[in-house]
Length: 213
View: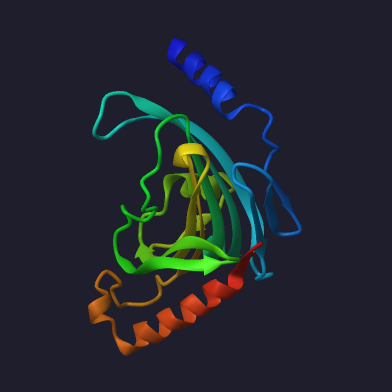
């Protein structure tokens, strides 16, 4: 109980109440501070379905102690028979101490392509990959609304580190189910022609799904 009270007090001191809340207006995410971000969902088939905020205490991997993490996720999805077929989600994370690793996608398995590209004159990291285990925060936000997830998704993500001492990060992910395909996606060097064509189409759709202003 005491630990929970200390966490709540620390969150108030660190994250405070002066930062304007993130808003969703006309299928657009608007964040004025920490981070300063405006994401327009251009694909009208993707509608806002859920948001979730969670805080937790995590231990450092290579040192004593830990940090309080605040995660927020906002999900725009196309639903079919309660299943998420395609979606854009914005995931924002802030830490009370320490800094995020410079490589946002360092822990991502099954990378197909990744690097850095410019958007609006600023550098963003990007990563194309597949996964069968979606982030817990995203999964919880979807399940809380009574929706379900497919088994396998392709993902194209754009992310950035922000804040004092790199204490925050966000990434915007476009995901699309490929559960109906029999091919495996864990070895890009063995992709069939059908997979390569599917991937090319997927990246093109990802680039059109949203816009960062």
